Length: 189
Image (tube, rainbow, N blue to C red; front, side):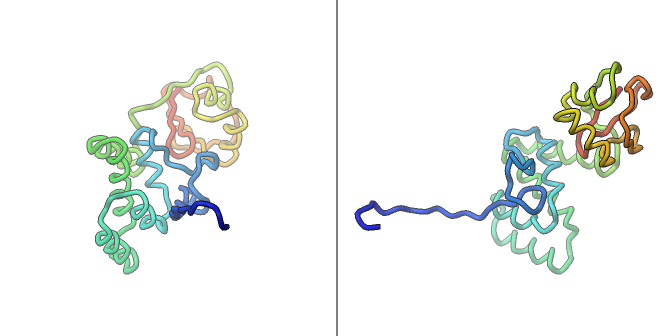
């Protein structure tokens, strides 16, 4: 329009979230928070789809373009396991928001807990009085009882590596049992 001061526009690509389809957004629950603990941040990066690795390198890291081009070629010709590049990506991102030691610790934690299936160091204790869904919600492991019930029906809650699909009283769970809620949250009785 005439008579208006000139305007400038800054365009950037939209970063796809960890779900692999929608833009990254806290409201959609597919985001990696800049203030999250290093283990959580590392785990979320490791959960992205392989197709997003290069985009994440380009948009979220300071890795030189020539090196990213090498990564792209390695993915195309299949000469690298995408897990290797994801670990590098996760390390780069955690280092930016925490430090090198936090990235190294997060890598070791990921390998121990998710690749080797060992119990993590930080396990949240839950109460013994009520139903499992109630106690998981009280401990902050689920957003609500409805969320806990949804996770149950989806088979996303395990007790001692066995999926459970019905709500049970916590008092019936063996003392010292490890409860896995979703992919990255752990509790114990």
